[in-house]
Length: 95
Image (cartoon, rainbow, N blue to C red; front, side, top):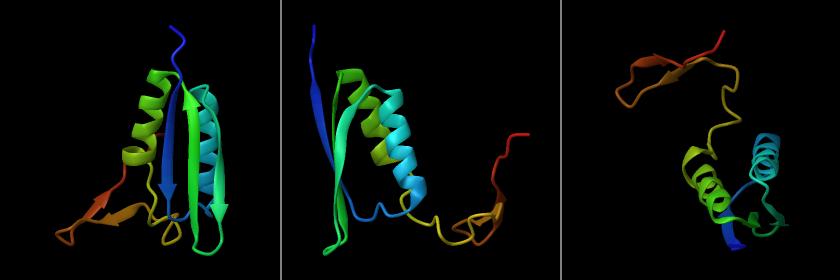
C-alpha cells in the first residue's frame, strides 16, 4: 500500500567503527534510507531513517535492543565476561 514510516534515534556516541558499520549495513539490508547527523559538542548523533513498516520495526529493535552501545573498547578480544554474581560465563562462539 506504499506506506513510508520514519524513525528518529538519539545516540550518545557513534564514534566507534563497529557502530557505524552495523547501522549502515543493517540499513542497507532492510532497504532503509536516511542519514546520520553527528555533533561534536555536545557529543551526540541523530539517526534518521525511512522505509517500509516492517523494515522500520526490525531496525528499531536493532537500535534499541540488539545493539551493544557500551563496553566495546574494554576487553574486545576477551571471551570471558563477568556475570552480576561475579561468576565467569563463556560467550558462545561458532566454529
